[in-house]
Length: 271
Image (cartoon, rainbow, N blue to C red; front, side, top):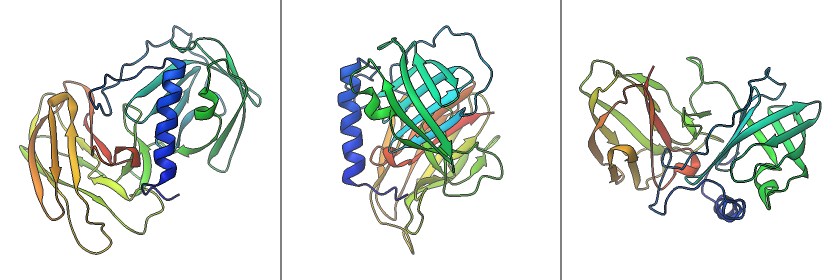
């Protein structure tokens, strides 16, 4: 699948914005938000159920859907996050409990070959079937053996092109790169390393390089960490150094404002 910017991706983002408005879905304030900046719907008060045959993470365009033991979550772009109750039976998926459209919606599902295809039977939320009723590609669980250029989900359920994990615990400075590499069907838009592991409250002088050379598109990139007020542009062949602080627990997502919908994102993680 070609991850380059295309009219198709732009169209998907526009459709998502209109459907979110129609459904009254959770959206971030009109401040140009990014990953981690959205208004999150309260978690439904459903009892946990046993894992289903289709539990897992899936992506399509700039969207991710997660099915997890009786719950579903949908994230798209920088603005939309829906979460609710999922009931899975043989060939049928029933969604309910989403704050903006709590009525029950019924979809059929077919899984196989690393994909999940959903088709709306009855969805009372206007237009939501446009975003959910499609074929989704499975995202494998991130492990130490995950190969470079794979698509993975970050802890906040954004998707990213994975180019390695770097343990920076105990360090005061580190370097990463941000780039678009030619010749990859997936994962060409990335930060490398993608996951930085540190300690609670650790401060790190992080140098972000925009390399040039063979098989690299020379474009301006960006490093944004919204929770800490950081956003810097980086021209081809140049770099920028920012001071970031690891959270006390959990993770913070960083991203390129220009290419976040292509998976150009990463995370500061406290294991």
